[in-house]
Image 1 (cartoon, rainbow, N blue to C red):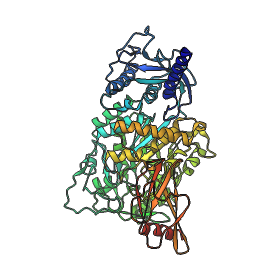
Image 2: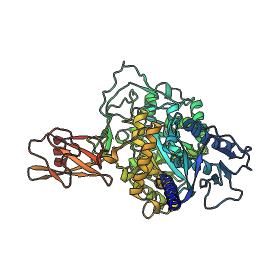
Image 3: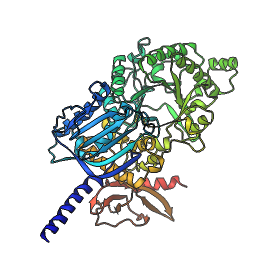
Image 4: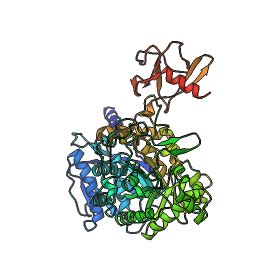
Length: 635
């Protein structure tokens, strides 16, 4: 009887150990297929790496993995010949290509004896490494050695490959300059989630960030501005004698270094030179490129555009002049040097938010319209885009632009990045043009990710759930024209890397899953479970993220003379507690169960979310005056 009891006890100990290593697997993006097994592999200081010594790519990928392991565990994993079969992690390329996996797919098989990683191409092995790291405990993300009793990889068999080839993140380094090392850091973070395209927004009204040797003023003048701190669009205009000390740019050697760094991680870099609008830095450098004579300065964040319910117009001309041949001569020089630097097949020419009110006043534009039989300002911009396309194609590259390039007639071979919802992408696909989907209501990760009462202020909100609902194939579009999708991080309101991380994560988790994982595998509640696990990994890694999903979103209406407030949780399983008496609520305060009326003389409502007995959200203080203003706007 005693031996039977010991047998049962040992069985449950093994079962508990297996459960610990398999029930909490939290891979982002979700693999195509994951089969759990009872065996598990324990990584030790005696674990060896097996990779073909003659293959430089395999050696680099294996080194990438072993370096991270050593940083966190202190283990130095020596290489071993392929004859070694136990206590090994093996990286191999398939002798006969598995058509299911394609170029970026992989398989992982974890047994007690070791881990077998296989792929058709080195890129697949690299993405397998990202999954393998996620299978290890969160402490593997540590930047210093962690004393942990065991490093367990759960028993699994994974088959995985991406849904889309284009899986991008856009990083705006023009509005605020980010150093070469910070861009590398951005790359390191994005590849963990199998992104393979970095879109660098290199030029805008607030700065020109790439050295063009044939046009030196672009960086001598265009890369520098007066420093301001505050809310972009409301900052004080610079005085003429104020020093232009804020900014910076990448030399051509810097760009080459970044391209090599990215390529080693299977990331392409696509440059964006944003024209004809968003060109204040270029016009400040070479004023003769404007339709409007005058002197210009690089914007420091002051207001120079007026946005209305029906559109926008410029208070200062920030456009290049489509009627001026000098513009095309300058752009030919720019795109010659850009094309020589960047191996990627596309160059992004912007084309968005071009204010045309100064063009309407220009005699040169009127003459151009008459000469070229252009009916309106949209056709003027289309004329410009078509000429730019010819320049870019003459350099052996393809043109990509924001969906405004559809207006007035799309250039013959242009690809479209659809940002104003999905309509532009669907239209371009119908015209049999290639499309990258980037709708602002899902993937603009510079926008607020919760209620404006607590988020850094931007004009609009995109919740995590909205990002997770991103579907790259617009309704009715032929999938063969949809290259994929990407999230965009504009940085008007982002001054530093920590804030960039806060805005990127966790919404970039959601977009990664939308462009990698099978559509039918997406599951919001399971995604949230995995996001929380990755929050723990980010805590260990020292990467900042937004906890906004734990905070409610406020909705307010009027009921007679009183305000009625509805609190909408973003995820399930949370309890909300509130106060109107200026004190700080905890779980012993009134629990929110239905919309509440604001007491007549209340000044604030404070709200906090709990999971069980533990506070998990942030303390939100919402002024009643703000609620009233929101209710009044609904009238």
